[in-house]
Amino acid sequence: MIIKTFELDKLKSSKVNSFLLYGENEGFKSQIIEKYFINKFKKNVNKYDENEVLNNLDNFISNLTNKSFFEESKLIVIYRATDKIFEIINDLLEKNIADTTILINAGILDKKSKLRAFFEKEKNLICIPFYSDDLRTLGLIAQNFFKDKNISISQETINLLVGRCKGDRQNLNNELSKIENFMMDRDKISNDEVMKISNLAENYNVSELTDSCLSKNIKKTINILNENNYSSEDCILILRTLLSKSKRLLKLKKEVKENQNIDRVISSFRPPIFWKDKEIVKKQIESWSLNNAENLIYKINEIEVLIKKNSVNSLDILSDFILNQSQGLNN
Image (cartoon, rainbow, N blue to C red):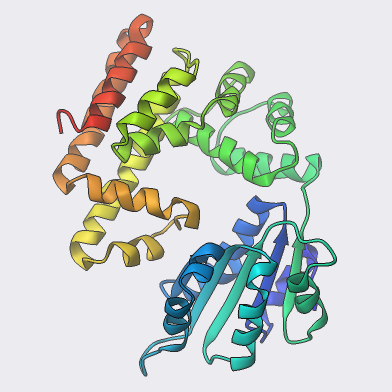
């Protein structure tokens, strides 16, 4: 059964427990998965990549079918799905596993796709296609974001930002996230600042640089710093992105200390950690002690003050700091 994106409220009353979300609009899919599924099941969510299922099928089936008497209903999410997983999904649905919802997130599937055709034709399954957003839709998303964050911005600047996202909601969300990290305690952003921030999309993603630093992957960190032509204006954005991720790291470390199970903490963390980031976040947790993670936040704030006082040498100061943290120096 096919449901269009403008009919999504039907999901609230639906008794169907198997869903296929496919298409190129990853940003929109992520929002719907969070709103209608993750929030409903809260901590009882298990996320898999298709390769994880195919390479460890026995373990996947065991986790899916073995259930304790007191366990509540759960959600199984399979990302990056293709027709390779069709037979497995077909077998699972025939088993009709109780109290389990299966959600499949796939990319573009053509009309010949077995997976797509199966979910479209069966009345007890739901298939939702996600197509690219038009400029008007992206513009409204951006406007609502800046209104919600009480950030003053011109319509011209919003149009500039939307135009750079090439119809991809995920690209827009990434850009808005960078702007939010950059703004911190400010309430107005200019056209020039947006141009400088969004230009970083042409380089390695700032998030990739900060993730490599927190993972203490010195080789990759050096490569990113060498391959990119960062400007002094980029320093504050990079630092604030690092600060945001460091605060998340500290919170994760505290939860791991209480629960002793890294995988469970990562899966239940809010806001949710996307499946493709799970391994690198796990590496970060393993690379830092609770005390050092806390000290890092203080150091980042000190470095930001130092950079603002020494703008001429800001890139050198930032690079030295990031390299030191990647090597575990001064921790």
